[in-house]
Image 1 (cartoon, rainbow, N blue to C red):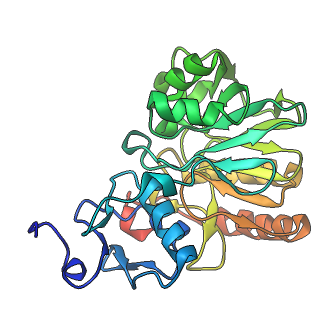
Image 2 (image 1 turned 30 degrees about the vertical axis):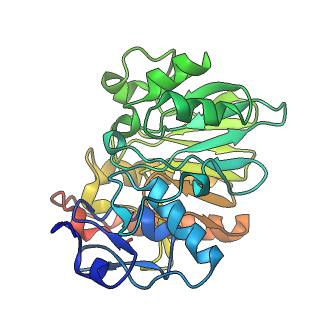
Length: 299
């Protein structure tokens, strides 16, 4: 047995190897089976049925470092669930990329039948073909610079327009569409872009149908607090600007699904989401700049 195997692998099949950097993706997809222990993911117990086996395969095929592994054999490619339908409109792409800080990405279906990709998974020709099987992808929407790595390749593969905000244009200078300023812009059928400077200078929210909010890294659902949170310890540009952005935008936001790049997803009735967003906005007004510290994120 390879010395790199963790201790749990000596007595069980599924394990997490030493490359894990605590991005939380696996814990989102296999709650109760994978948990956080000493600042990284661990397999808490082995699956008891086929449903739990599928959850671990989802975690394995999403993990950006390919750290979710088996001692007996590799995860079964036939059990790769991605793109994974969250409902009849949004698919989770999976196959998170080490070049986008392990961010989640999504495919959004429009009423006309066309699709938009929000941020991107890792790049491969075979993955691009898999997402394209869902339908014609017309636009690739980047929420901010940290998630821009594969945007041009996917946009070119799909013959799609690539969008980014001018504040983060250096990360994708070849973008086809550039959002400017802080005004709300309609970027597609029922899809509004709300620039939200804070996490980065050019961070953007994309809200579809007053139902789906693709928040990038601006805010997320925290299992630790059971609420919407900002990652103040990894706000690269300005927590003060983020507070101002939220205050400027919150009354114009209406959605049921919170779909972030990092942190968990959550669905609640729109009035409850609105109430939580107002409370978040009030909390962020009291926050002060702090040093970057990934270990302080409240997943």
